[in-house]
Amino acid sequence: MTSVSGSPAVPAKIASGFGSGALLTPANLLTLGRIAATPPFLWQLTRHPVAWTTLAMWVALCVTDLLDGKLARRHGATRSGAFLDPLADKVLVLGALAVLVAASRIWWVPALLIAAREVGMSWYRSWIARRGVSVPANQTAKVKTWVQCIAVGLVLLPATAPHPLLYGSVVWLAVALTLFTGAMYAVEGRRLAALLPAPAKG
Image (cartoon, rainbow, N blue to C red; front, side, top):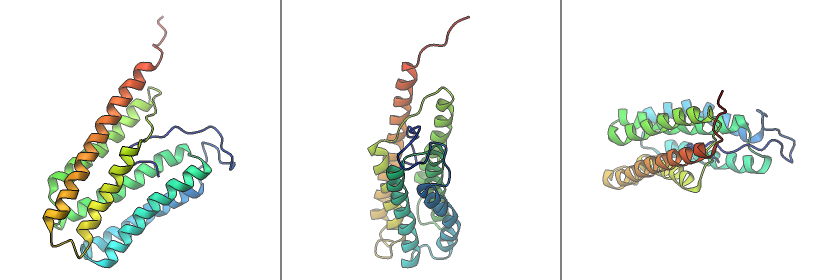
C-alpha cells in the first residue's frame, strides 16, 4: 500500500507488462473494490456503530489496503494507482470518522484535525506536482495509516467501545502522527523543489 499521504515515483515500465499509465491492474481493481465497498460499510456503521459485523467489514477494508500495496509492489506502481489508493484511503477513513462523530462515538475536534490535514495535503500534493515534484511515501506515513485504522477499529470493537479513554488515546495518537507526517511531507516537498533547476530567464 502506498500511504494515503504520498505520491510514489512511478516507473516508466515494469516487468509484468503494466506501463505507468495502466489503469486495470490487479492493485487498482482491488482499490476500486475498496472504494465501491465503502458506502455499504458506512451504511452499516450508521446502523450499528458498535458491532462485530461492522468491525469485520472495517478490518476487511483495511486489509485490502495492505493487499493492494503488495500487488502494486509486485506488478509495479502506476500513475492511476498513485491517485486512486490515497483517494480510497481518504474516503474510507474520513467517512468513518464523520459517521462516528455524528453518532457521538468520538469528539469532533480530532476528526476535524485529521480531515483538515488530509484535504490540505491533497491540495499541497497537487500544487507541488505542477512544479514537477513528487514526494514519495515513507514508512512513518504507512504507520500513520495503520494507527488510523486501529483507532477506528477500537471504537467499533464491542470489548473496547465502553472505554472512551482507551480508544480516545489511540485516536489522538492517530491525530499526532497525521499532523507529523503532513509536516514531514511539506518539508520534503520544499527540499525537493529547491533542487529543481531555476527557470531560464528571457
